Image (tube, rainbow, N blue to C red):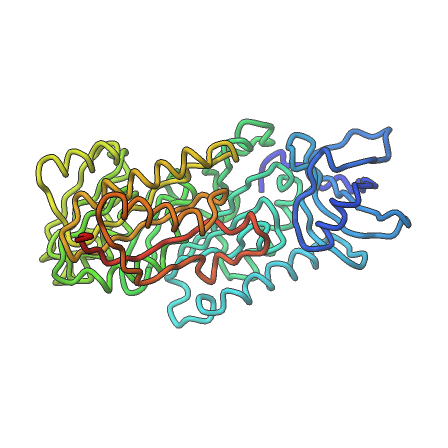
Length: 417
């Protein structure tokens, strides 16, 4: 990479933590918070993001090693627990290969070079603060912590060798982009050549395109793949409403599944233009060509209320909102928002129709989310018959409690007589 990214400093910080924090680290939790650190040394050297923090127990024995982040409340992101281990190219290679092994359904597929999937899922793959998504022949490396900058020159070649992909894009979370990025910017190509413009890939037997350099997240919401396939199987002959449609994943699968019509709703006009482009990529399929596809820009809550007022009705409503709970204090408001969305969605659903509603808020538990939806439906005079509850697909493994965020419910709906 031709930037000012620093090499790893070689510093090893000796860290002692509280007994409770040590117990959690040894139990597999990947984070050590600043207020859990009781001592750190040596004290005569500056500490930089990405320094190796070696945690010792009360007997001064090695317990774990992680990446130090002086700017984050999560002060140490754990890489390894147990016996002492060098953090070097061999370590990165072993970690990436372990992640690839979890994704065998994708990596060993006959059309693997055309697929999109998550190769590294951060903390859940023991590479905390790092996400790597593959879109056909492009890797997208997203940093959620500045601790990874000093290790990119070692890590990127390992990723390329493991996947056989040489084109790599760097994406930066907002908090990372706001700090010292060592001359790198969000969307930079850090290996190979990736032109501006969409990268095509397959999801099931459908074509999609993702703006991997400038699009939301890494260009596409890969975590809903399995749920989109299910929606496709439910859509034949139905009028479908796709709320928070983003780049049209649910919409395209619904159309390909034989939907009579699909209305995609999102607050972003450029995002809906991407949805229309994805629909057009599949226009050679008779089912897609026969589907009446329309889009509507607007606030989801307001659009749903307006559709109800004007008497619009649908056989299948999909509601896939962004996270409503970034902080613990947001949870109560998030649950109220989910309940309101349930009521609004049921207001535009025909009797005997189906509701698909999802949450990607990790701070909202599965139990609270499903209880909120069913309670709101009952209060609105509807009976929900559960078809399916789903969670994380195989390429989004869960390795610790906070790593579980995605839940979706599929229900058939009848009036409560």
